[in-house]
Every structure is written in structure tokens, then in C-alpha cells.
Length: 365
Figure 1 (cartoon, rainbow, N blue to C red):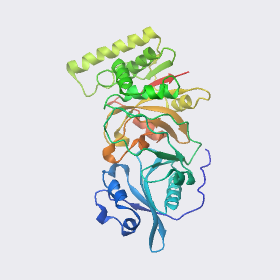
Figure 2: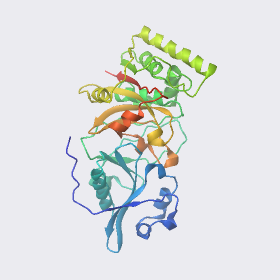
Figure 3: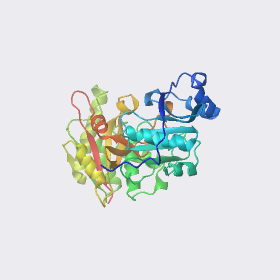
């Protein structure tokens, strides 16, 4: 394992639970003394409880010298600084020390109040701005920053948020091709998203074989393989009767299309080791579009596509084209997201009594 990047110098800190529903009057006096009202208003504007909000505080003379609100999705290997207040460099050092102590591989920082200069001085690199999307949801901060605490990180792709609740498969495929240089970033928009979704959908979801077929049709020069360890229709557990049957017919048609187009459909479960090997292959631009359940990261058991594009010690790095603004998430949570190996292994097994894994391996060349 690569040695974590050292903290410039040690700084004492304390971790204090954050009560998201209590309101500013119930927050520690030490915090209200160093945090402006606009910062506290932003902190309290969302129910951050699902993301274990906590304050990392640096003691000073007569109170706190600095503090940062820190959150993270469950099952992941990162910590996010929403804001740092007071002595900002000291707060950043404290959060990095906390992350290393927790064996997290990454710290990200939302750019609400921090300057690029302060972020750089704390060892954080700027993130690429998210691509414009086709949604009216709040966009979050215009900037964000990242510091890897283990390994050297991975090459950063562009980030685009899906504009519907059902087009995640199409967006992950498009993001893979943008990163491979097959698609220009500026051409990734809502029309491209929905056009590819229309070609791949099983109404409304995209199942693995149909998604793989749509990718091959759109980009014939890209190598595409599907891994699905069942021959039965998938993503239909919530349906019965005719609603289930006609979608099953479409999935059988997708398998026939895959055979005609030469898209291999392996009736095997892609292992986590094989997934890591694919995205870490030197000199290749290989991506895995992976079906996961959002039960761990978001609290609801809904199938969802993410793009796996890199790996660091102990975690696979993904792009999640959706984030939950109601829980205080922004694109900074969903971009360059390290998911712990064991968590990704568990959340990518879907279904009822028989659990299956669906994945599409795309090699852009």
C-alpha cells in the first residue's frame, strides 16, 4: 500500500457530533463565535443526518480556533468539508489528519467559501467544473477541491449530472466515452443523454445487455462486453403480469441483438478483482458501467448505474451521475467518489433471493 501523504504538521482536534435539526441556537457557542450566519444557514438548510455530519474542531485560546463541517456518504472512503471557519488552514490540517486516522483515501472540499489559494496551500487540487446539465436542481458550488490521502489518485474525468431519475445508464456510458476521447465534453447534454437512453431503455430502466448493445450501436469501434450472471430478465422484481412480461420480451430481444452485433454476454459474475484489473490496466482506457443498489449510500434500495474508472488502495473510484440535494449533497460528493472495496462488492449484488451482478465493460480504445 502506498504511504499516505503526510500532514504538514500535527494539529490537535476534536470530533463533535453535529445536530442537523437543532438549529443555530443549539450549536456550540464556540462555533457561533467563528462561523458567519450565511455559513450556518447553509449548514442547516438540508437534513444531513444520513451522511453522519460532524464538526472537526481545533481548540484555541478560550474556545475554538477553527472548525469544519464534515460529511460523507455511508460505505465510501472519503470525507467532505462543507465549509471551514475560523483559522481555515488549521481546520483543513485537522480534517486531513482525521481522514488519515480513519483510513480514508480522500478529502474533498466544497468551494462555497474557501479560496483557491487557501485550498492549494492545504494540499488540495481544484476539481474540473461540472458540465452543464439539463436539470433545474441547485447546481451546488461552482468549484471544489480534492486531496488524496492514500495512493496518487486517479485521472479526473468530466462530471455531468443526469437530468432524469432513469437515465443514469446512458450518462455513465457517455461519461466513459468522454473520458476515452470518443465524445467531446461539450456534446454531452440532455439531448445526447436522452437519445442514448431511448436506444438502451427497458422502460424506464436500462438493463445490462440493452445498455451494452446501445453502446456498440452508437460507437462501433469501441469494444463492449456484458457480464450478467443470470439468463433471467433483471430489474423487474417490482413488476408482475403483463407489465413484467413485455419488458422480458425486450430483454430477450436485446440478447439476440447482442449476438448479431458480436457483443459478448458472459453469464459470469464479474469479480471485484477483475473490475479493479480492468480499470487499472496500464495504457488502456477501460471503464466498467456497474449496476449498484443505492440502499447503502442513500438509504433506498433502487438500482442505479455508476461509472467505475479508477482504483486506489482499498477503494474503487466511480462517477455517480446523481446526488441527493435533500441530504446536503452536491456534485462534489458524486465526482471522483471512492467506494470502499467491500461496500462496492456488496452494493453491486442486486435482486431478491438470488443476487446477481450486472456490468458493462467498455474499452474506448
